[in-house]
Image (cartoon, rainbow, N blue to C red; front, side):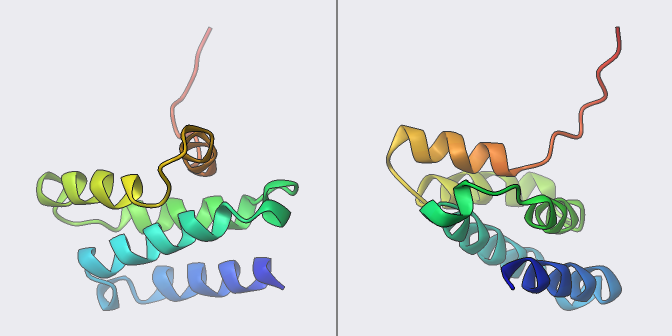
Length: 99
């Protein structure tokens, strides 16, 4: 059921990107990262969550202003280092790796 919620939010953000200004995107990102720390969710792949996080990040307009706020808000998600690693792993890897 939670995957359906992620898919619906992805659809909303994708079809109406201007309805979500940067500060709202940051709030949604922080909330989703906090939700991802639930023990029951850690045991399953969260591809839909990763897609939603990517869509939210790609829609940020003012990166210079928003990036420090994003880092600060993610720092408040959890103080435990294992949780911070789990939060970082939620974000999709968009780097192209070549050999």
